[in-house]
Image (tube, rainbow, N blue to C red):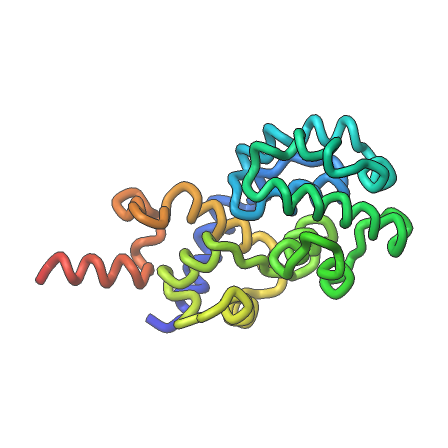
Length: 217
C-alpha cells in the first residue's frame, strides 16, 4: 500500500465518522485558548480544564493577567506540570499581548511564536483552531500515531513530521486531521499498550501489520 493510499483511507474514515473533531480544551475566546494551550504542554487536557475556570474568571483580559505577579498567579497553576515556568510564561505572554499586539491574539505563526511559552506546536494550535488556518500541530500523540499508521516515515523531529503530513493531507482537512490524530492517540493508539484489537484503522496501519506478521512467525 502506498503512503497516499494510507492517507486516503485515514481521511475517508474520519470524514465519515468524526467530521467535527475539535480540541477538548475548554475556552470561550482566543485569549482563553492561548492560556489553556500554554498550560497543556506535557499535561492532560482534563487537568487543564480543572485549572482554567478560576484563571479565566479572575484574569478575564490580557491587561488583568499582565498586571498580576508570580506569587498571585502561581497558586492557580501549581497542580499542572512545570508550574514555575508556566506562571512566568503566562504573565510574559499577557504583557507582550498588551504591549505589542493591542491586547489581541496575533493571527500568524511568526507572531505567535514570539510570545513567551508559545512554541511552534502551540502556535499551530491557535492558528488552526481560532483562525482556521491549515496548520498541523505535532505533539507526542500526533508524532507517534502518524508514524505507526505509516503516514510519516522516519521523521526525526516534530517539524519533519509536520512537513510530511501537510504534504499529503488536502488543505481543507489539515486542521481537523490534527485532532483526529490526537484523539486516536489519546484513546486508542496508546503509547505503551495500543488497543489494536478495537482499532478501526488497523486494516491500513503499518504498526499493526508488523505486529500481526510477527505474531504469525
